[in-house]
Image (cartoon, rainbow, N blue to C red):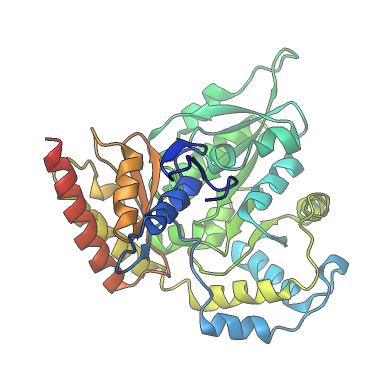
Length: 389
């Protein structure tokens, strides 16, 4: 293997040391190792994320037929249509199409804050855990963290986190809620709790941003419309390349002035694209054709979770599986060895902490894939936990 791959190897191909942390890149490393050593699984079911989906043929056709312009100059008709559609869908004045969910969140943070400000968010928040320290690097902000279960917190938590108006302290400036909560196992915030925490933030003059990367899943699980969630926030970001199955792209919605500022930040960050109507067309197709089917992902995730929960030694409360994400623990087992065991049998998952595994159901997974995953995962878990009992 080349030296710039995910792991370093000795001359006889035995692992010397891992150079990446558990998670995404290591998952690729373990999967490639199984192939390198000659073990090819009979079938592969990719449960690493809902970002692994490929565009459907109908989506590809929509992309190829999209009318195009130059979005940097503001005249790509398909981008304009997508932004207008999303502004209406979320009940906001304007919208900005950006390449990624991380850019959507970071552009919003930059628009709402000044260097030295403090962001109030859960410790599991994507903006902190998985966006490369961008709030510090791009906006110069610090964090005050909440620690509630499933990535949630309360209005009392918000009141307690507010800094005094004193020049010794950072300014409490922005509240960020993530719905659904990725590290919280795809948990959906109750709408009344969202109303409570944002109202508490506004009592102290804070702005509010919703990281709604998987808000489509929250809508499908509850029947609550996007505009009902968005009504409590100044800005909302939402992703097309997760549950909705588009290849690229996210949206940020808000008032006209804030979105104008975000469009400038997008340009500053190198996210302004030219004939991006190709990508906007995929997002429009996803909005029209892939929202209703999200309940299928939720049903399949529940079915897989129930099967896993019956394995000896597995800690998984199926009541917490509300959408398409399953997180379970196998105490006493090494999470990386668990991941490697599943990978070697064609079930691709992520290790996300000590003895903890995440699996995500998406458009890329059908009922037969879930049947196969249940057979493999329950068999391997039963064997592994029995051998260490």
